[in-house]
Image 1: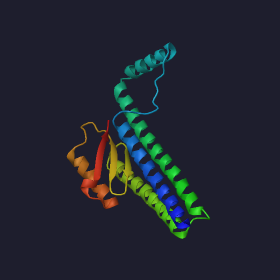
Image 2: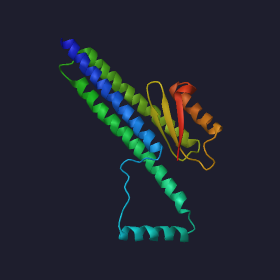
Image 3: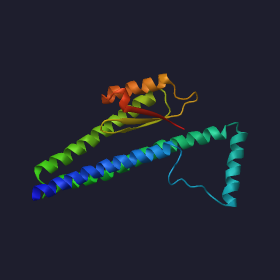
Image 4: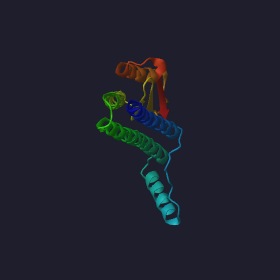
Length: 191
């Protein structure tokens, strides 16, 4: 009976981790499509006049206000995506650490929790390496979401659009770092 309970606890923790990863992936898909949850717009005559002054100043300085807005939104997406990914992992990690430290847990459940913690650490390191290598190739920003048998890589939009050459270059980096095949890699251009 105790073995069954311990295994159920370990399975529940793994289920929570998978759920957190799925929710993070789902949220990243929504934000990639232009839906930024929690994004608010200021309303009121004072704020409207401030925004008008900022637009006027930007145009007076010869800057393209829409280009700056796109760059700001893109930067916001990437930092938000990284933050959400980290928060989901932190929540899952705390659950796994509690399971690993549980005095009532059997060795098998502790081993499973520790293996899941190690897997999360490996994913984190691999994602960071991919993001750094992609930005080193000249792309403004990048965020990667690694799963068990797949990866999604979101790259900042480039002026000419993401070409087949760009996708091949990014895909090569991902394949080197993960060992995944091309059909397991999804490359998305953030708009």
